[in-house]
Length: 450
Image 1 (tube, helix red, strand yellow):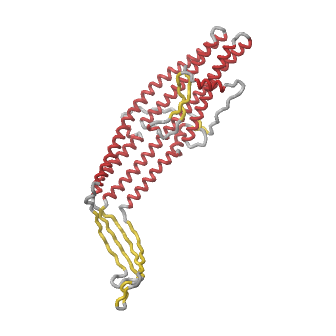
Image 2 (cartoon, rainbow, N blue to C red; image 1 turned 90 degrees about the horizontal axis):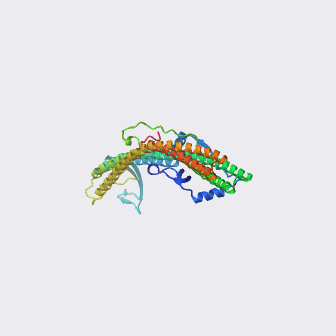
Image 3 (cartoon, rainbow, N blue to C red; image 1 turned 120 degrees about the vertical axis):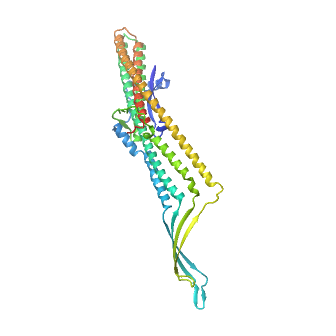
């Protein structure tokens, strides 16, 4: 005997940026806590409170669009591009003209005179400009190119974040569909149990039935009624999760069921489609670029410096206005291994990025194979579950007719109802598994979101 309970599940690996949602799952055996809750919730004359009504309903495509546009995680990832733009400007500025001004006032305790002429005035103001233009700056040029690589990586990271948020939104959306299916199944089972309980009570009142049969029917109705509340809570939590993902102030309900049309089998590289693999490849290329530029740290630098200045009042031996032009070279000779250590760190970063990309490709290929097998298995399981559910409903109908005719016992009716309820649960689970397998395959192929 099986019943449906709520299991809180979160996305993993490439699905780690989404909100957690409550998925309906099948667990073996009745849990005492669930039965006790059902018995406590049962009140024949009091209607149980309904869960809050969702504030809005959205289609699947609309939910994905709103999530990738408004989710705070995506907005935060977009700031990485702005940060990279700042790094590019800083690196570019280091290779261009730099102009600075300086004003100095000098006051001596006494001026210096010689034969009636002022050699050094007591108060003097000197103003100068310094224009510095790098002529040879290989390391600065390399940092500029590296900053542009950082922007590219930030753009790839944003795309992958959008994929993760889209997957989390799709996961929550599918959870709503599956949870609603469970609510419908448990409600139908409860209604059938109520009809049986009413009939058993009627027989008891007429004297042709027993109190034991009525209590058994009432217990089954109580259990089903409690399971309806559990399923409704699971549905409400999934609606709240979807609301958080699309930035809505309240629970959001699902309108349609996505088709998830699968692309034809392709043999192309997954790196061309999957955003996470593109990100890993971009990080590897950026790290290799930095490593290749390590030799430029040893290149000499050459700067042209132009400094005009003016002094008032002028000194006796110096003109009031003057300028000078300097060519300043800096040649690294010995740094006690500092640059060599930096190169080793860069090499280690390259190896790490390369290993990450290799592992990502291996994992992606495995995900594709597993998703295809899950779809094939899910289709077979769904066909079997639907056949079993149809057969179970027929058994319920026949058993009820037989019970009313006196050819079946109360226990047989209850067992038939339980089996039908469990069969409906299995159908809901099989449908949910198949939808998720299709979504997993599209994600593994890099085709979701489209």
